[in-house]
Length: 422
Ligand code: DC
Image (cartoon, rainbow, N blue to C red; front, side, top):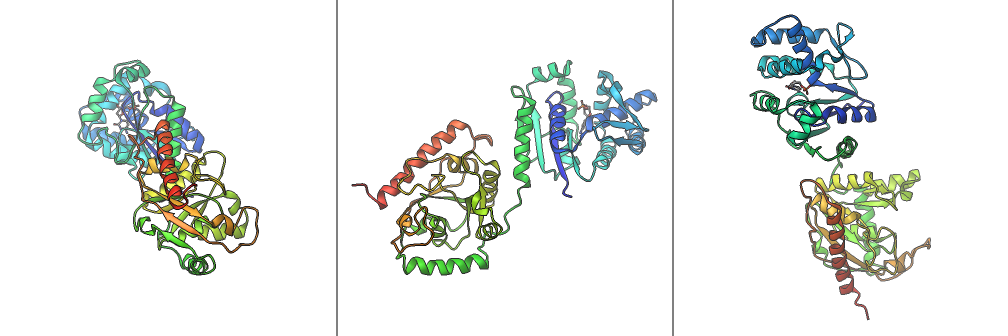
């Protein structure tokens, strides 16, 4: 099985434990609180009357404790077979933990200790150096923070001294890992925080697209199709050079016929990935053919996070993705009604939108007809435009509305150009 690891770092009182427990129960993984491992070693040191000023003796103690500690399915540490319980939660133990955690030899021992506790299925691991040291290739790294007053209130004790010690130590100091999802938990619920991390996980686990080059299958289908477009369908194309030859872009055509995406695919040598309604993928044959052509299913009617994540992942990899702004076939429409999924994708990925007007496809393959008819197809590809990008990694809803409105105007302009209204 694939291992799933979520790394959660942040200062005391940021809400790591609550969020980690929520995530662990949703994902059926154990929760590993590495602070508890430091606390356990600190408790042993205090119980045995050891000096807190001897790094190598404390490192040796850490290895001894590690050898006799296990992690229960509920995330509870057991030392010599007994749950460690609440004794590690006192302020005195927390203080001692923070002190011994500053010694590099102790940290080396602790990191080994913690890694050994992670079961094959993975874990939600919380601490200070998980994303930076303990589990650098975690599926998701999150960094939680909150303002100091809030954190002190949650801990029912001051946190400033602890913050300083945990941040300023030379090894394993607290800092956000590269690429970490940073969340300020001051004003949001633990459920909301967990939800954002779940979203990031879902995206991280969507398989990376294989290659951006069209397969032999696609090239063969496209060759035959291009012959039909140039022959019986007498297709004329303007602006094909506006389709970028490399890099991410969202192809946004109007939608009048089943052949709209294949028409686009014939305009570029690149592979065009596209969102297709899930019904197309329902049969085994449909699934095989449409997937091989670069399609992936989308559930219509409400936002489909899986499909959006797949599209984002493709765009992050520099792919061309075709999306119908109108959402469904609207044979008489001229982009008057567009949904906002495509604008969200553009904002979130920062990829440009390529506006495309298709005329005549509705006559080739009108809705409800089983066999194609001869008709003339005209295509106008407009210039790519950007609607902006995320703000701090987030796409505010009102920005999506504004981007949708802007994009809609550009789409209508291209439509008006190829097919002026009387
Ligand atoms: O999160 P906590 O308060 O239970 O952690 C206790 C101490 O352990 C904390 O002050 C610093 C240390 N710690 C650490 O250095 N690295 C970790 N990954 C987790 C905790």
